[in-house]
Image (cartoon, rainbow, N blue to C red):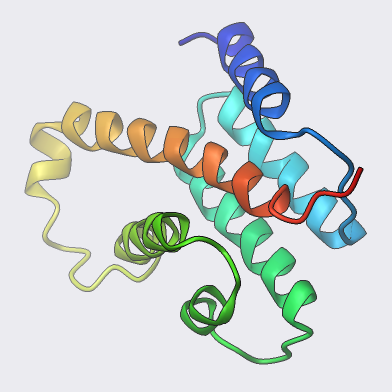
Length: 141
């Protein structure tokens, strides 16, 4: 995918999933914009991290939950089960990259970076869809 096709992909997701109106905080809007810019520019890991941040911001706002973990916010939300499962998958994937247990164990990353790059791109596609599914989960007409 090039930048133009990635932007087109985001527009297609919006067209598919947004059927009414939505409202969320300016914090959420700001973070989603950053996730979209990262995705469109092929900075997939950043898109995943910021996408999860946007979803966490939205869920925290909806639940009016101060210090709950992302895991708790997902579990106590009224999102459908399959979407919750995807959010947990994204959360676990993100944690693997954000909380590196053994930074010296990098042989695979050095020898076959394309394996990680392909996996990250795939997860970024899942993340961008999940962002919209979460943010558009409570639409009004």
